[in-house]
Length: 184
Image 1 (cartoon, one colour):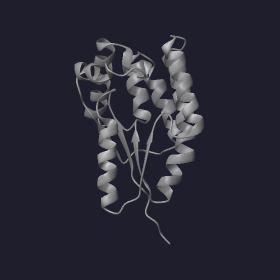
Image 2 (cartoon, rainbow, N blue to C red):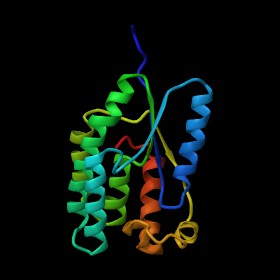
Image 3 (cartoon, helix red, strand yellow):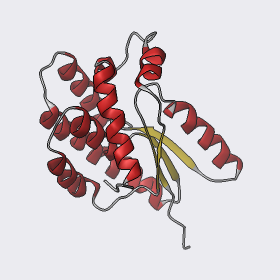
Image 4 (cartoon, rainbow, N blue to C red):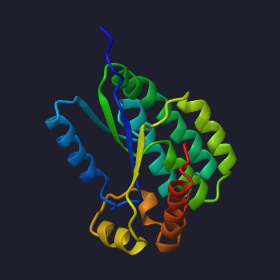
């Protein structure tokens, strides 16, 4: 039986941009069309990656890790997630909708935090092993909207607490990648 490969669709944007809502809407739409869909998040999605996510957030919240260290841990979590969840699902013809992927590392650790963007892109090539998204959906909102939407959260991730200047750099990075059609 010749089964068609599933589609890999990444939803990107700052905290509060509506990624979760849009993923659920897309999932419902695709399932009504009779397609198989897996939703996930990154970093996370599988047990080991979720533990790495918790470690990153704990270290970041206490200012114990900079952009290069974050990059290494994010890519470790991503490698596990990609090879144990995403690639097998795609091979079985399941469409994968994910809240974030490798483009987040370029945006957060590169553009927003001033990490070495060339190094991030080089490591991304190794970790992703040619697994490119079929589409990246960038949800573009203002820093003010992000701050307002995330204000009520008590357990938001430490990256969402960085303030308006950080969010402006982050959004500018996402916009640059979108305008240049980066395939990070």
